[in-house]
Image 1 (cartoon, rainbow, N blue to C red):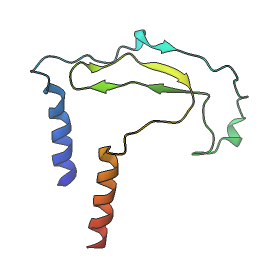
Image 2: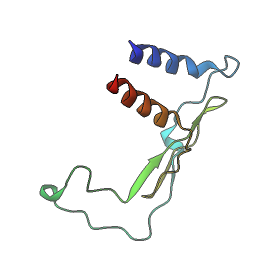
Image 3: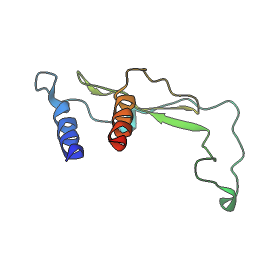
Image 4: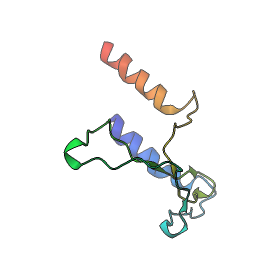
Length: 100
């Protein structure tokens, strides 16, 4: 039931900006920045889930005023995330719920 309520609130988030239609993702506008040192592609039988990674990653930012921003493909790297991100709060709540 919690997941259903959460999903409903996420779908309603789309129209917080005065009811205006928000921008969708436009793949044709993707900005591509290639890495300077590409790795060799391993054979299929050597690919390991969670251990073999691509040289690049896709990033598309979203905000509740304008919607989706320009997609970007850039070299693989670390993600930056706010310490107050909801994902941390939700994880803690799951842990506390399992203890009860």
